[in-house]
Image (cartoon, rainbow over all chains, first blue to last red; front, side, top):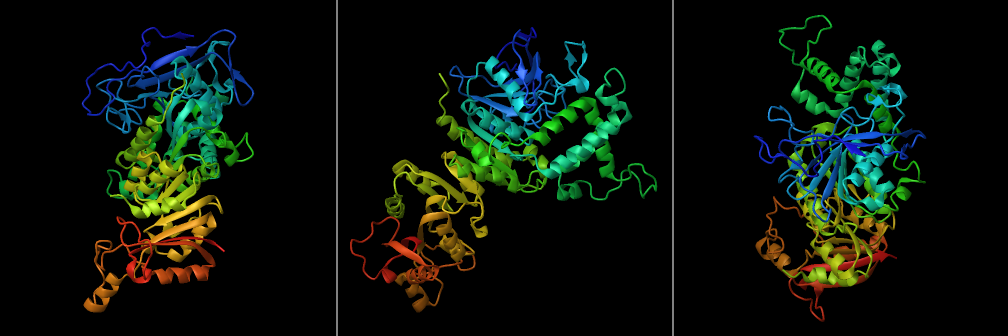
Length: 400
Length: 198
Protein backbone atom coordinates (compact mmCIF):
# COMPACT_ATOMS: atom_id res chain seq x y z
CA UNK A 1 0.00 0.00 0.00
CA UNK A 2 1.40 3.37 -0.93
CA UNK A 3 0.61 6.88 0.15
CA UNK A 4 1.11 10.23 -1.49
CA UNK A 5 4.35 11.56 -0.09
CA UNK A 6 3.42 14.55 1.99
CA UNK A 7 0.23 13.24 3.62
CA UNK A 8 1.56 10.82 6.21
CA UNK A 9 0.88 11.91 9.76
CA UNK A 10 -2.05 10.56 11.72
CA UNK A 11 -3.87 13.26 13.61
CA UNK A 12 -2.00 15.96 11.83
CA UNK A 13 -4.14 19.09 11.96
CA UNK A 14 -1.79 21.93 11.11
CA UNK A 15 -2.12 25.00 13.27
CA UNK A 16 -3.43 27.67 11.02
CA UNK A 17 -5.23 30.90 10.84
CA UNK A 18 -8.90 30.60 11.32
CA UNK A 19 -11.32 33.25 12.32
CA UNK A 20 -13.88 30.79 13.65
CA UNK A 21 -13.75 29.97 17.30
CA UNK A 22 -14.26 26.24 17.79
CA UNK A 23 -13.07 25.43 14.32
CA UNK A 24 -11.06 22.37 13.43
CA UNK A 25 -8.71 24.83 11.77
CA UNK A 26 -6.92 24.58 8.45
CA UNK A 27 -7.10 20.97 7.35
CA UNK A 28 -5.70 18.88 4.54
CA UNK A 29 -7.31 16.02 2.66
CA UNK A 30 -5.16 12.91 2.74
CA UNK A 31 -5.09 10.06 0.26
CA UNK A 32 -4.37 6.37 0.75
CA UNK A 33 -4.12 3.88 -2.09
CA UNK A 34 -4.59 0.19 -1.38
CA UNK A 35 -2.80 -1.68 -4.16
CA UNK A 36 -1.13 -4.74 -2.63
CA UNK A 37 -0.78 -7.54 -5.10
CA UNK A 38 -3.01 -10.51 -4.46
CA UNK A 39 -5.69 -8.50 -2.66
CA UNK A 40 -9.03 -7.30 -3.89
CA UNK A 41 -12.27 -5.86 -2.64
CA UNK A 42 -15.13 -8.26 -3.35
CA UNK A 43 -18.29 -6.35 -4.05
CA UNK A 44 -21.80 -7.24 -2.96
CA UNK A 45 -22.99 -7.24 -6.59
CA UNK A 46 -20.45 -9.92 -7.49
CA UNK A 47 -17.67 -7.86 -9.06
CA UNK A 48 -14.41 -6.79 -7.56
CA UNK A 49 -12.41 -3.60 -7.43
CA UNK A 50 -8.68 -3.07 -6.91
CA UNK A 51 -6.62 -0.99 -6.37
CA UNK A 52 -8.67 1.44 -4.31
CA UNK A 53 -7.82 4.99 -3.34
CA UNK A 54 -9.60 6.70 -0.49
CA UNK A 55 -9.57 10.40 0.30
CA UNK A 56 -10.02 11.23 3.97
CA UNK A 57 -9.56 13.93 6.56
CA UNK A 58 -8.84 13.51 10.24
CA UNK A 59 -9.24 16.01 13.07
CA UNK A 60 -7.93 15.75 16.59
CA UNK A 61 -5.42 13.20 17.88
CA UNK A 62 -5.72 9.45 18.10
CA UNK A 63 -5.14 8.34 21.69
CA UNK A 64 -2.34 5.89 22.45
CA UNK A 65 -4.99 3.32 23.43
CA UNK A 66 -6.70 3.99 20.09
CA UNK A 67 -10.02 4.27 21.93
CA UNK A 68 -11.20 7.71 20.90
CA UNK A 69 -11.77 7.34 17.16
CA UNK A 70 -15.05 8.54 15.69
CA UNK A 71 -15.82 8.01 12.03
CA UNK A 72 -18.27 10.28 10.32
CA UNK A 73 -20.01 9.10 7.14
CA UNK A 74 -21.16 11.60 4.52
CA UNK A 75 -24.39 11.70 2.57
CA UNK A 76 -25.00 11.67 -1.19
CA UNK A 77 -23.26 14.90 -2.14
CA UNK A 78 -20.75 15.02 0.70
CA UNK A 79 -17.05 14.34 0.73
CA UNK A 80 -14.13 13.86 3.09
CA UNK A 81 -14.05 17.55 4.02
CA UNK A 82 -16.34 17.39 7.03
CA UNK A 83 -14.86 20.19 9.13
CA UNK A 84 -12.45 23.11 9.13
CA UNK A 85 -11.22 24.86 6.01
CA UNK A 86 -8.66 24.04 3.38
CA UNK A 87 -7.34 27.55 3.39
CA UNK A 88 -7.99 30.78 5.25
CA UNK A 89 -9.62 32.08 2.07
CA UNK A 90 -12.26 29.36 1.93
CA UNK A 91 -15.70 30.89 2.17
CA UNK A 92 -17.24 27.77 3.61
CA UNK A 93 -16.11 25.19 6.12
CA UNK A 94 -16.61 21.44 5.93
CA UNK A 95 -20.12 20.06 5.55
CA UNK A 96 -20.49 19.15 9.25
CA UNK A 97 -18.38 21.92 10.73
CA UNK A 98 -21.32 22.70 13.02
CA UNK A 99 -20.74 19.43 14.86
CA UNK A 100 -17.01 18.80 14.53
CA UNK A 101 -14.35 20.89 16.19
CA UNK A 102 -12.84 21.84 19.56
CA UNK A 103 -15.64 22.02 22.14
CA UNK A 104 -18.32 20.92 19.67
CA UNK A 105 -20.45 17.76 19.92
CA UNK A 106 -17.70 15.74 18.19
CA UNK A 107 -15.03 17.42 20.25
CA UNK A 108 -11.68 17.26 18.49
CA UNK A 109 -9.96 17.96 21.79
CA UNK A 110 -11.18 14.58 23.04
CA UNK A 111 -11.84 12.52 19.92
CA UNK A 112 -10.03 11.62 16.73
CA UNK A 113 -12.63 12.30 14.04
CA UNK A 114 -12.25 10.79 10.59
CA UNK A 115 -14.25 11.31 7.41
CA UNK A 116 -13.59 9.50 4.13
CA UNK A 117 -15.07 10.03 0.69
CA UNK A 118 -17.15 6.97 -0.12
CA UNK A 119 -16.16 4.36 -2.68
CA UNK A 120 -17.81 5.43 -5.92
CA UNK A 121 -17.39 9.09 -5.01
CA UNK A 122 -15.76 11.81 -7.07
CA UNK A 123 -13.89 13.74 -4.41
CA UNK A 124 -10.68 11.78 -4.24
CA UNK A 125 -11.86 8.21 -3.69
CA UNK A 126 -12.04 5.65 -6.47
CA UNK A 127 -15.18 6.09 -8.52
CA UNK A 128 -16.45 6.13 -12.09
CA UNK A 129 -14.41 9.26 -12.87
CA UNK A 130 -11.19 7.61 -11.65
CA UNK A 131 -8.70 6.11 -14.07
CA UNK A 132 -9.04 2.35 -14.54
CA UNK A 133 -5.45 1.08 -14.39
CA UNK A 134 -6.37 -1.71 -16.78
CA UNK A 135 -7.27 0.73 -19.57
CA UNK A 136 -5.61 4.00 -18.59
CA UNK A 137 -8.97 5.71 -19.09
CA UNK A 138 -11.75 6.68 -16.65
CA UNK A 139 -14.01 3.79 -15.67
CA UNK A 140 -17.20 5.59 -16.67
CA UNK A 141 -20.06 3.11 -16.51
CA UNK A 142 -17.64 0.18 -16.62
CA UNK A 143 -17.26 0.95 -12.93
CA UNK A 144 -19.05 -1.83 -11.04
CA UNK A 145 -22.30 -1.10 -9.19
CA UNK A 146 -21.36 -0.48 -5.57
CA UNK A 147 -23.57 -0.72 -2.49
CA UNK A 148 -23.58 0.78 0.99
CA UNK A 149 -22.00 -2.49 2.20
CA UNK A 150 -19.15 -1.99 -0.29
CA UNK A 151 -18.65 1.57 0.92
CA UNK A 152 -18.36 0.28 4.48
CA UNK A 153 -15.87 -2.41 3.45
CA UNK A 154 -13.74 0.30 1.86
CA UNK A 155 -13.94 2.41 5.04
CA UNK A 156 -12.66 -0.61 6.97
CA UNK A 157 -9.59 -0.70 4.75
CA UNK A 158 -8.87 2.83 5.95
CA UNK A 159 -9.54 1.99 9.60
CA UNK A 160 -7.21 -1.02 9.39
CA UNK A 161 -4.60 1.23 7.80
CA UNK A 162 -4.96 3.73 10.67
CA UNK A 163 -4.64 0.92 13.19
CA UNK A 164 -8.14 1.39 14.57
CA UNK A 165 -9.56 -1.99 15.53
CA UNK A 166 -12.73 -0.64 17.09
CA UNK A 167 -14.35 2.74 16.63
CA UNK A 168 -15.62 4.56 19.68
CA UNK A 169 -18.43 5.80 17.45
CA UNK A 170 -19.79 5.98 13.91
CA UNK A 171 -21.94 9.01 13.15
CA UNK A 172 -23.90 9.77 10.01
CA UNK A 173 -27.04 11.28 8.53
CA UNK A 174 -29.03 10.20 5.48
CA UNK A 175 -26.73 7.99 3.41
CA UNK A 176 -24.23 8.39 6.25
CA UNK A 177 -26.81 6.91 8.61
CA UNK A 178 -27.19 3.91 6.32
CA UNK A 179 -23.45 3.34 6.50
CA UNK A 180 -23.65 3.49 10.30
CA UNK A 181 -26.40 0.85 10.34
CA UNK A 182 -24.55 -1.36 7.86
CA UNK A 183 -21.33 -1.16 9.89
CA UNK A 184 -23.16 -1.97 13.13
CA UNK A 185 -24.90 -4.96 11.57
CA UNK A 186 -22.17 -6.42 9.35
CA UNK A 187 -19.18 -5.68 11.60
CA UNK A 188 -20.52 -5.56 15.15
CA UNK A 189 -17.13 -5.99 16.77
CA UNK A 190 -15.73 -2.85 15.14
CA UNK A 191 -18.09 -0.35 16.74
CA UNK A 192 -19.13 0.77 20.24
CA UNK A 193 -21.54 3.64 19.62
CA UNK A 194 -23.79 4.23 16.62
CA UNK A 195 -25.41 7.59 15.91
CA UNK A 196 -27.80 7.44 12.96
CA UNK A 197 -29.98 10.36 11.94
CA UNK A 198 -32.35 11.44 9.16
CA UNK A 199 -32.12 8.01 7.60
CA UNK A 200 -33.93 4.69 7.26
CA UNK A 201 -33.27 0.98 7.59
CA UNK A 202 -34.24 0.60 3.95
CA UNK A 203 -34.53 3.26 1.26
CA UNK A 204 -38.18 4.31 1.13
CA UNK A 205 -40.19 4.09 -2.09
CA UNK A 206 -40.63 7.83 -2.48
CA UNK A 207 -36.87 8.37 -2.19
CA UNK A 208 -36.22 5.73 -4.86
CA UNK A 209 -38.72 7.58 -7.05
CA UNK A 210 -36.96 10.92 -6.67
CA UNK A 211 -33.57 9.33 -7.31
CA UNK A 212 -34.92 7.74 -10.48
CA UNK A 213 -36.05 11.16 -11.71
CA UNK A 214 -32.54 12.46 -11.10
CA UNK A 215 -30.95 9.53 -12.91
CA UNK A 216 -33.31 9.86 -15.86
CA UNK A 217 -32.42 13.54 -16.13
CA UNK A 218 -28.72 12.66 -16.37
CA UNK A 219 -29.17 9.78 -18.76
CA UNK A 220 -31.49 11.84 -20.97
CA UNK A 221 -28.79 14.47 -21.41
CA UNK A 222 -27.27 13.82 -24.87
CA UNK A 223 -23.85 14.59 -23.41
CA UNK A 224 -24.06 11.60 -21.10
CA UNK A 225 -23.07 9.28 -23.95
CA UNK A 226 -23.74 6.12 -21.96
CA UNK A 227 -21.44 7.33 -19.18
CA UNK A 228 -18.33 7.71 -21.36
CA UNK A 229 -18.25 11.47 -21.52
CA UNK A 230 -14.85 12.17 -20.00
CA UNK A 231 -12.69 14.22 -22.28
CA UNK A 232 -15.79 15.82 -23.81
CA UNK A 233 -18.63 17.96 -22.57
CA UNK A 234 -20.18 16.28 -19.51
CA UNK A 235 -23.97 16.00 -19.05
CA UNK A 236 -24.07 19.20 -17.00
CA UNK A 237 -27.68 20.07 -17.80
CA UNK A 238 -28.93 16.67 -16.71
CA UNK A 239 -26.84 16.73 -13.55
CA UNK A 240 -28.06 20.23 -12.72
CA UNK A 241 -31.70 19.14 -13.04
CA UNK A 242 -30.99 16.07 -10.88
CA UNK A 243 -29.56 18.37 -8.24
CA UNK A 244 -32.55 20.71 -8.41
CA UNK A 245 -34.95 17.85 -7.74
CA UNK A 246 -32.77 16.45 -4.99
CA UNK A 247 -32.39 19.84 -3.39
CA UNK A 248 -36.14 20.32 -3.12
CA UNK A 249 -36.43 17.03 -1.23
CA UNK A 250 -33.91 18.33 1.31
CA UNK A 251 -35.99 21.42 2.19
CA UNK A 252 -39.47 21.79 3.61
CA UNK A 253 -42.63 23.54 2.49
CA UNK A 254 -42.45 25.97 5.42
CA UNK A 255 -38.75 26.68 4.95
CA UNK A 256 -39.12 27.38 1.24
CA UNK A 257 -42.11 29.59 1.82
CA UNK A 258 -40.18 31.58 4.44
CA UNK A 259 -36.99 31.80 2.43
CA UNK A 260 -38.43 32.72 -0.98
CA UNK A 261 -42.14 33.21 -0.84
CA UNK A 262 -43.39 34.16 -4.28
CA UNK A 263 -40.84 36.93 -4.54
CA UNK A 264 -39.72 37.94 -7.96
CA UNK A 265 -36.08 38.28 -8.75
CA UNK A 266 -35.08 41.89 -9.59
CA UNK A 267 -38.14 42.51 -11.72
CA UNK A 268 -41.35 44.40 -10.93
CA UNK A 269 -43.77 42.06 -12.58
CA UNK A 270 -43.93 38.71 -14.37
CA UNK A 271 -41.81 38.62 -17.50
CA UNK A 272 -44.27 36.35 -19.29
CA UNK A 273 -41.39 34.24 -20.46
CA UNK A 274 -39.72 31.08 -19.19
CA UNK A 275 -36.77 32.85 -17.61
CA UNK A 276 -36.27 32.62 -13.85
CA UNK A 277 -38.84 35.17 -12.67
CA UNK A 278 -39.12 33.80 -9.14
CA UNK A 279 -36.29 33.91 -6.60
CA UNK A 280 -36.75 30.22 -5.93
CA UNK A 281 -36.23 29.44 -9.63
CA UNK A 282 -33.04 31.45 -9.67
CA UNK A 283 -31.89 29.76 -6.47
CA UNK A 284 -32.48 26.27 -7.84
CA UNK A 285 -30.78 27.05 -11.12
CA UNK A 286 -27.79 28.33 -9.19
CA UNK A 287 -27.77 25.24 -6.96
CA UNK A 288 -27.80 23.01 -10.03
CA UNK A 289 -25.03 24.91 -11.77
CA UNK A 290 -22.78 25.09 -8.71
CA UNK A 291 -23.20 21.34 -8.25
CA UNK A 292 -21.92 20.59 -11.73
CA UNK A 293 -18.69 22.36 -10.83
CA UNK A 294 -17.85 19.89 -8.12
CA UNK A 295 -19.77 16.67 -8.74
CA UNK A 296 -19.53 13.94 -11.33
CA UNK A 297 -22.72 12.83 -13.11
CA UNK A 298 -21.78 9.13 -13.11
CA UNK A 299 -21.08 9.27 -9.36
CA UNK A 300 -24.61 10.63 -8.95
CA UNK A 301 -25.93 7.54 -10.75
CA UNK A 302 -23.82 5.10 -8.75
CA UNK A 303 -24.46 6.65 -5.36
CA UNK A 304 -28.21 6.98 -5.82
CA UNK A 305 -28.20 3.34 -6.95
CA UNK A 306 -26.44 2.37 -3.72
CA UNK A 307 -29.01 4.38 -1.76
CA UNK A 308 -31.92 2.70 -3.50
CA UNK A 309 -30.47 -0.77 -3.01
CA UNK A 310 -29.99 -0.22 0.71
CA UNK A 311 -31.97 -2.55 2.93
CA UNK A 312 -30.40 -3.37 6.27
CA UNK A 313 -32.52 -6.53 6.45
CA UNK A 314 -31.66 -7.78 2.96
CA UNK A 315 -29.40 -10.63 4.06
CA UNK A 316 -31.58 -11.44 7.07
CA UNK A 317 -35.10 -12.66 7.71
CA UNK A 318 -36.19 -9.30 9.12
CA UNK A 319 -34.86 -6.05 10.49
CA UNK A 320 -35.21 -7.48 14.00
CA UNK A 321 -33.02 -10.47 13.14
CA UNK A 322 -30.58 -8.18 11.33
CA UNK A 323 -30.05 -6.34 14.61
CA UNK A 324 -29.76 -9.49 16.69
CA UNK A 325 -25.96 -9.57 16.75
CA UNK A 326 -25.22 -5.85 16.97
CA UNK A 327 -23.02 -4.94 19.90
CA UNK A 328 -23.20 -1.17 19.70
CA UNK A 329 -25.37 1.25 21.62
CA UNK A 330 -27.57 3.36 19.38
CA UNK A 331 -28.73 6.94 19.32
CA UNK A 332 -31.24 7.52 16.57
CA UNK A 333 -32.38 11.05 15.71
CA UNK A 334 -35.22 12.27 13.56
CA UNK A 335 -36.18 15.76 12.40
CA UNK A 336 -39.83 16.76 12.53
CA UNK A 337 -40.10 18.39 9.07
CA UNK A 338 -37.86 15.91 7.23
CA UNK A 339 -40.21 14.49 4.65
CA UNK A 340 -37.52 12.46 2.88
CA UNK A 341 -36.92 10.44 6.05
CA UNK A 342 -39.80 11.29 8.39
CA UNK A 343 -39.67 10.35 12.09
CA UNK A 344 -41.62 7.11 11.60
CA UNK A 345 -38.68 5.67 9.62
CA UNK A 346 -36.31 6.35 12.50
CA UNK A 347 -38.78 4.93 15.01
CA UNK A 348 -38.84 1.75 12.94
CA UNK A 349 -35.10 1.38 13.50
CA UNK A 350 -35.47 1.92 17.24
CA UNK A 351 -38.44 -0.44 17.42
CA UNK A 352 -36.43 -3.24 15.82
CA UNK A 353 -33.52 -2.61 18.20
CA UNK A 354 -35.83 -2.65 21.22
CA UNK A 355 -37.32 -5.94 20.08
CA UNK A 356 -33.89 -7.50 20.47
CA UNK A 357 -33.33 -5.68 23.76
CA UNK A 358 -30.50 -3.60 22.40
CA UNK A 359 -29.45 -0.36 24.01
CA UNK A 360 -31.17 2.27 21.85
CA UNK A 361 -32.34 5.83 22.38
CA UNK A 362 -34.60 7.88 20.13
CA UNK A 363 -34.61 11.66 19.94
CA UNK A 364 -36.78 13.88 17.78
CA UNK A 365 -35.53 17.34 16.87
CA UNK A 366 -38.22 19.91 16.20
CA UNK A 367 -37.11 21.79 13.12
CA UNK A 368 -38.61 23.39 10.05
CA UNK A 369 -35.49 22.89 7.90
CA UNK A 370 -36.60 19.58 6.44
CA UNK A 371 -34.07 16.86 5.61
CA UNK A 372 -31.26 19.42 5.63
CA UNK A 373 -31.88 19.95 9.35
CA UNK A 374 -29.29 17.31 10.24
CA UNK A 375 -26.63 19.55 8.70
CA UNK A 376 -27.87 22.72 10.36
CA UNK A 377 -29.55 22.29 13.74
CA UNK A 378 -26.42 22.51 15.85
CA UNK A 379 -27.91 23.76 19.14
CA UNK A 380 -30.74 21.24 19.04
CA UNK A 381 -28.54 18.20 18.41
CA UNK A 382 -25.22 18.81 20.07
CA UNK A 383 -26.42 18.30 23.65
CA UNK A 384 -27.83 14.81 23.19
CA UNK A 385 -25.05 13.69 20.83
CA UNK A 386 -22.35 15.01 23.17
CA UNK A 387 -24.04 13.32 26.15
CA UNK A 388 -24.28 10.03 24.24
CA UNK A 389 -20.63 10.08 23.22
CA UNK A 390 -19.49 11.13 26.70
CA UNK A 391 -21.37 8.40 28.56
CA UNK A 392 -20.49 5.84 25.90
CA UNK A 393 -16.80 6.68 26.10
CA UNK A 394 -16.88 5.73 29.78
CA UNK A 395 -18.05 2.21 28.94
CA UNK A 396 -15.76 1.64 25.98
CA UNK A 397 -13.03 -0.96 25.99
CA UNK A 398 -10.88 -0.91 22.88
CA UNK A 399 -9.64 -4.29 21.73
CA UNK A 400 -6.11 -4.95 22.99
CA UNK B 1 -32.88 13.73 48.62
CA UNK B 2 -33.20 10.03 49.24
CA UNK B 3 -36.45 9.01 47.63
CA UNK B 4 -38.33 6.42 49.67
CA UNK B 5 -40.88 6.00 46.92
CA UNK B 6 -38.07 4.96 44.56
CA UNK B 7 -36.85 2.44 47.15
CA UNK B 8 -40.33 0.95 47.50
CA UNK B 9 -40.71 0.72 43.72
CA UNK B 10 -37.30 -0.94 43.45
CA UNK B 11 -38.37 -3.55 46.00
CA UNK B 12 -41.28 -4.43 43.71
CA UNK B 13 -39.06 -4.94 40.64
CA UNK B 14 -37.54 -8.39 40.17
CA UNK B 15 -33.80 -8.67 39.69
CA UNK B 16 -32.79 -8.57 36.02
CA UNK B 17 -36.26 -7.60 34.81
CA UNK B 18 -37.00 -5.73 31.59
CA UNK B 19 -38.28 -2.39 32.79
CA UNK B 20 -39.97 0.52 31.01
CA UNK B 21 -40.21 3.77 32.98
CA UNK B 22 -42.81 6.15 31.58
CA UNK B 23 -42.25 9.90 32.02
CA UNK B 24 -38.88 8.92 33.40
CA UNK B 25 -37.64 12.50 33.79
CA UNK B 26 -33.86 12.69 34.02
CA UNK B 27 -33.61 8.95 34.60
CA UNK B 28 -32.84 8.94 38.32
CA UNK B 29 -35.17 6.02 39.15
CA UNK B 30 -34.14 4.07 36.06
CA UNK B 31 -30.45 4.54 36.82
CA UNK B 32 -31.02 3.27 40.39
CA UNK B 33 -32.91 0.24 39.07
CA UNK B 34 -30.08 -0.56 36.66
CA UNK B 35 -27.56 -0.18 39.44
CA UNK B 36 -29.39 -1.95 42.28
CA UNK B 37 -31.53 -4.51 40.45
CA UNK B 38 -29.51 -4.94 37.24
CA UNK B 39 -32.59 -4.43 35.15
CA UNK B 40 -32.66 -4.05 31.40
CA UNK B 41 -34.25 -0.65 31.54
CA UNK B 42 -35.44 2.07 29.22
CA UNK B 43 -37.53 5.18 29.56
CA UNK B 44 -40.04 7.32 27.72
CA UNK B 45 -39.86 11.07 28.21
CA UNK B 46 -41.21 14.17 26.45
CA UNK B 47 -38.75 16.80 27.57
CA UNK B 48 -35.64 17.29 25.40
CA UNK B 49 -33.53 18.33 28.36
CA UNK B 50 -34.61 15.32 30.43
CA UNK B 51 -33.97 12.92 27.51
CA UNK B 52 -30.50 14.40 27.18
CA UNK B 53 -29.90 13.84 30.90
CA UNK B 54 -30.96 10.19 30.54
CA UNK B 55 -28.65 9.71 27.57
CA UNK B 56 -25.84 11.30 29.57
CA UNK B 57 -26.42 8.69 32.26
CA UNK B 58 -26.01 5.95 29.68
CA UNK B 59 -29.70 5.02 29.71
CA UNK B 60 -31.87 3.95 26.78
CA UNK B 61 -34.64 6.49 26.37
CA UNK B 62 -37.40 7.11 23.85
CA UNK B 63 -38.23 10.75 23.24
CA UNK B 64 -42.01 10.64 22.95
CA UNK B 65 -45.38 11.90 24.09
CA UNK B 66 -47.28 9.50 26.35
CA UNK B 67 -50.57 11.13 25.39
CA UNK B 68 -50.13 9.31 22.08
CA UNK B 69 -50.05 6.00 23.88
CA UNK B 70 -47.41 3.32 23.63
CA UNK B 71 -48.01 2.39 19.99
CA UNK B 72 -44.28 1.90 19.43
CA UNK B 73 -44.12 -0.81 22.12
CA UNK B 74 -45.03 -4.44 21.62
CA UNK B 75 -47.46 -6.48 23.74
CA UNK B 76 -45.84 -8.15 26.72
CA UNK B 77 -42.41 -6.86 25.73
CA UNK B 78 -41.51 -5.80 29.25
CA UNK B 79 -41.66 -7.42 32.68
CA UNK B 80 -42.46 -4.18 34.48
CA UNK B 81 -43.83 -0.82 33.34
CA UNK B 82 -43.53 2.06 35.80
CA UNK B 83 -45.35 5.40 35.95
CA UNK B 84 -43.99 7.35 38.87
CA UNK B 85 -45.91 10.45 40.08
CA UNK B 86 -46.97 11.32 36.53
CA UNK B 87 -50.42 9.75 36.10
CA UNK B 88 -52.10 13.01 37.01
CA UNK B 89 -50.21 14.91 34.28
CA UNK B 90 -51.42 12.77 31.40
CA UNK B 91 -54.28 13.71 29.11
CA UNK B 92 -55.49 10.11 28.95
CA UNK B 93 -54.54 8.39 32.19
CA UNK B 94 -56.98 5.50 31.79
CA UNK B 95 -55.62 4.72 28.31
CA UNK B 96 -52.08 4.73 29.68
CA UNK B 97 -52.92 2.32 32.50
CA UNK B 98 -54.44 0.03 29.89
CA UNK B 99 -51.35 0.37 27.70
CA UNK B 100 -49.09 -0.34 30.67
CA UNK B 101 -50.66 -3.75 31.28
CA UNK B 102 -50.62 -4.48 27.56
CA UNK B 103 -46.91 -3.74 27.23
CA UNK B 104 -45.84 -5.16 30.61
CA UNK B 105 -46.78 -7.98 32.94
CA UNK B 106 -46.62 -5.83 36.05
CA UNK B 107 -47.59 -2.15 36.14
CA UNK B 108 -46.37 0.03 38.99
CA UNK B 109 -48.16 3.36 39.33
CA UNK B 110 -47.43 5.95 42.00
CA UNK B 111 -49.55 9.05 42.31
CA UNK B 112 -50.42 11.84 44.74
CA UNK B 113 -53.59 11.02 46.67
CA UNK B 114 -56.03 13.86 46.19
CA UNK B 115 -58.14 12.69 49.17
CA UNK B 116 -55.29 13.37 51.62
CA UNK B 117 -56.61 15.24 54.68
CA UNK B 118 -54.54 18.32 53.81
CA UNK B 119 -56.20 18.61 50.40
CA UNK B 120 -59.64 18.03 51.89
CA UNK B 121 -58.93 20.66 54.54
CA UNK B 122 -57.93 23.34 52.03
CA UNK B 123 -60.99 22.66 49.91
CA UNK B 124 -63.38 22.30 52.83
CA UNK B 125 -62.18 25.13 55.05
CA UNK B 126 -60.62 27.55 52.60
CA UNK B 127 -62.66 26.71 49.52
CA UNK B 128 -59.43 26.88 47.51
CA UNK B 129 -57.68 24.45 45.23
CA UNK B 130 -54.89 22.94 47.35
CA UNK B 131 -51.38 24.26 47.07
CA UNK B 132 -48.76 22.35 49.02
CA UNK B 133 -45.13 21.37 48.98
CA UNK B 134 -46.00 18.34 46.85
CA UNK B 135 -48.45 20.30 44.67
CA UNK B 136 -46.86 23.74 44.47
CA UNK B 137 -48.79 25.01 41.47
CA UNK B 138 -51.63 27.47 41.12
CA UNK B 139 -54.80 26.06 39.58
CA UNK B 140 -54.31 28.09 36.38
CA UNK B 141 -50.74 26.99 35.81
CA UNK B 142 -50.38 23.37 36.74
CA UNK B 143 -49.31 20.29 34.80
CA UNK B 144 -51.50 18.23 37.13
CA UNK B 145 -54.71 17.92 35.18
CA UNK B 146 -56.01 14.51 36.25
CA UNK B 147 -55.75 14.07 39.98
CA UNK B 148 -57.32 11.04 41.59
CA UNK B 149 -57.66 9.46 45.01
CA UNK B 150 -56.70 6.04 46.31
CA UNK B 151 -60.32 4.95 46.13
CA UNK B 152 -60.58 6.31 42.57
CA UNK B 153 -57.59 4.27 41.50
CA UNK B 154 -58.88 1.10 43.16
CA UNK B 155 -62.13 1.60 41.28
CA UNK B 156 -60.24 2.09 38.00
CA UNK B 157 -58.43 -1.20 38.61
CA UNK B 158 -61.74 -2.94 39.19
CA UNK B 159 -63.22 -1.51 36.00
CA UNK B 160 -60.13 -2.43 33.98
CA UNK B 161 -60.00 -5.97 35.34
CA UNK B 162 -56.71 -5.42 37.12
CA UNK B 163 -55.58 -7.28 40.22
CA UNK B 164 -53.82 -5.21 42.83
CA UNK B 165 -50.70 -7.11 43.88
CA UNK B 166 -49.43 -4.41 46.25
CA UNK B 167 -50.70 -1.14 47.71
CA UNK B 168 -48.19 1.04 49.55
CA UNK B 169 -48.70 4.41 51.19
CA UNK B 170 -46.33 7.24 51.99
CA UNK B 171 -46.74 10.41 53.99
CA UNK B 172 -43.93 11.93 51.90
CA UNK B 173 -41.19 10.85 49.50
CA UNK B 174 -38.60 11.41 52.19
CA UNK B 175 -40.13 9.49 55.08
CA UNK B 176 -40.41 5.69 55.34
CA UNK B 177 -43.96 4.33 55.32
CA UNK B 178 -45.67 3.60 58.61
CA UNK B 179 -45.40 -0.02 59.77
CA UNK B 180 -49.14 -0.17 60.12
CA UNK B 181 -50.92 2.25 57.80
CA UNK B 182 -53.89 3.99 59.42
CA UNK B 183 -56.70 5.33 57.21
CA UNK B 184 -54.45 5.65 54.13
CA UNK B 185 -57.25 7.30 52.16
CA UNK B 186 -56.85 10.27 54.51
CA UNK B 187 -53.27 10.00 55.66
CA UNK B 188 -51.32 8.95 52.58
CA UNK B 189 -49.98 11.75 50.41
CA UNK B 190 -48.59 9.26 47.90
CA UNK B 191 -49.84 5.83 46.91
CA UNK B 192 -47.95 3.13 45.05
CA UNK B 193 -49.96 0.44 43.29
CA UNK B 194 -48.54 -2.67 41.63
CA UNK B 195 -51.15 -4.23 39.35
CA UNK B 196 -51.48 -7.00 36.82
CA UNK B 197 -54.22 -8.17 34.50
CA UNK B 198 -56.34 -10.61 36.46
